[in-house]
Image (cartoon, rainbow, N blue to C red; front, side, top):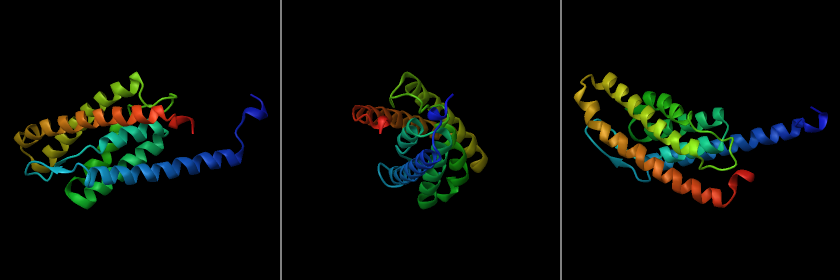
Length: 176
């Protein structure tokens, strides 16, 4: 490895600033999409249907893992804080976990791995919120009843992620 291939300190700083800025932007968009856009209250447990997870998937496909995890936790957590604070502790654990299966290392957002990751994220989300609901409310009937909403939310988020991702791939956003 030559000195020429090593990134300069200024370039490292510029990349960190770019990633921090994009992390903040993604966290804000996740918050808005989750708390206000397509926000549909369901059930008696304070839960709601939203498609903000699609932006978590997008953040995970655009950002290095630590930044994507931060955007997911901050964006999802702020949305719950603004709407139903009861779910905040579960959300700041579960949302970063659903970002883990995605990769940002490809030149495109929509890759076979990222499409498969949306299925893995669905399983993580449904399992996580089932466990959280069981811990909060105790009875097993309530978490089972909300499973269909969680599946719809994750499936819808996967569809939105693919639509957003294909559109952004056409703009070659990952080359910027």
